[in-house]
Image (tube, rainbow, N blue to C red; front, side, top):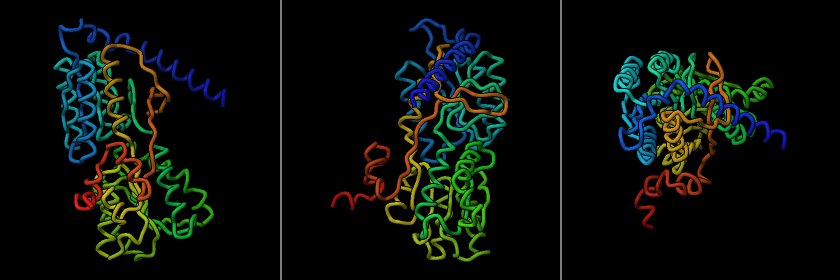
Length: 355
């Protein structure tokens, strides 16, 4: 263990030095304005704001960046790659000091990174990895571990633990995170599948994480196999909600295990009522402020410390990975409510809270 800790410290120091060197020609010159003359400006290019989760990310990010003296320009691409690229071009023309991108399509945004770097502007990829480019920094939760936690919970809580028939609903095929969630799930499930203990009856990808697409996938599974499966391994709360709607129409909601991710308000309500079994809580209160701090450091050309390196197809990207928590009915209060991420009234309703 001592050797492992030493290795991690060395990794962090090496990555810190590398990031500092890389930013010597990117970000430092544009961020070297003396305090009080010109405010530091960060561009935040978001995939979408249609989900409550991303509204929370935006608000926390902006609040922390502003507390550090930066102004944040926010743009919502509506899940359109061309629009998101236009937003990055706009940030570049406005002379921002750093750009933070939550990509709709990680591969498509490689061009955005290239254009930003041509203008001497560093880029931080937020929660979703931008692939096939010389990315400066990636900040996210450990997404492989998210998938592993979902699958481990499923395996342990099947009616007969370690054995059963399941349906798998993956996320958006354009989102690299969706592939990492699947990778983590596969890490856990493969031995059970290889032994024949777990059978995947149906599986598919949900375009743009749309609940409607997830409902269609669940409906297809029900049409082909009836209600003969024990669980739905849904990769996030939106797809879980779509699957649960399909189960509800069959009067089977709450009878079949359903996983999720993000601890959305609606998902926490479903967990409280029993129609969704679990979610993965990713403390946005940690992620968004941390990303804001790192973005400000990049903008000022300062070295930052990374605790990991993630391959993005062109090379290893210095990365900061945060921890995740599995949540079900037994620890709703001790996690999302205790942290202030959700209120009791939000989950249980005003009437239940007033009792």
